[in-house]
Length: 302
Ligand code: GLY
Image 1 (cartoon, protein in one colour):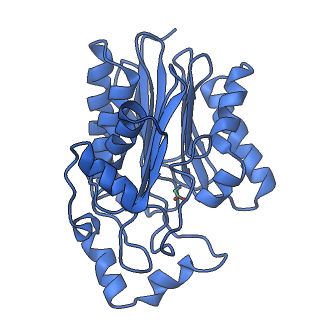
Image 2 (cartoon, rainbow, N blue to C red; image 1 turned 180 degrees about the horizontal axis):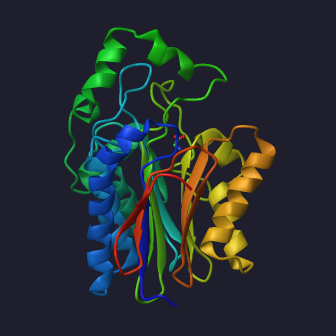
Image 3 (cartoon, rainbow, N blue to C red; image 1 turned 135 degrees about the vertical axis):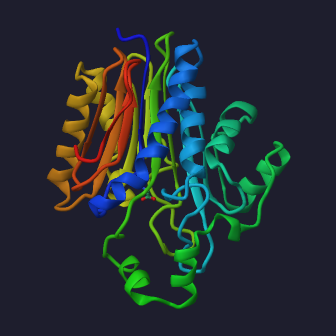
């Protein structure tokens, strides 16, 4: 088995190639933070939380701060963290006043008797657990706010009805530590200008993420509705439990969703229980960075 490994993603859709350069520093820094924890014997959970915290703080991605608001001009954030060792998870949805929802999700898992909190109750829990609440407007990125204020229909309109969102910049991380424990984290503001209250795959166990020692860990990105209809992260985990490697399971899961939906707009990152890393997408681009202890690598196409 490889000693440890971590892979992160910053979404999957069809962005212009010139944006790749903007994403590289934050993707590599997120992997570096996780790698440093794993290299000194830290846990997969700590590594993915730190990596995702960094991606949440980076305005380049649609998670944490710097995100598009919903149709009502409000940022609503979702996050999920899964511990493959204990089979426990924590998740939050439609959070409006928390800068790092993945940390709140971890506190839900470790400091409460529950698994999932939503809306105002999740914000209230954050305050009770010592996470400072911030004004919602501090989460929203300026360009999207202007589009919202100006009612720019070229941006707002595609988010209605059955049409697909244009961008999917969800972030995620999966890792295996030196004790062979795997973990997964996914964090997002959901689809840009989504209807208020809409929640996608990201905070749902088995959809936006899954982790189980002996199989592996998975984090998904893309059109959440298709991913949650098929419990895609659990599907990929099951494939690893049957003996597939991380890359084989990623390819199988993306082929599966592509066989059900004509344009699924899906991507995922995976680590298997042997320490192999993999990623796949049905979109032209997916932003990933990874290391298994050697150099840090980035890629923008599966
Ligand atoms: N994959 C993120 C979402 O659809 O909300």
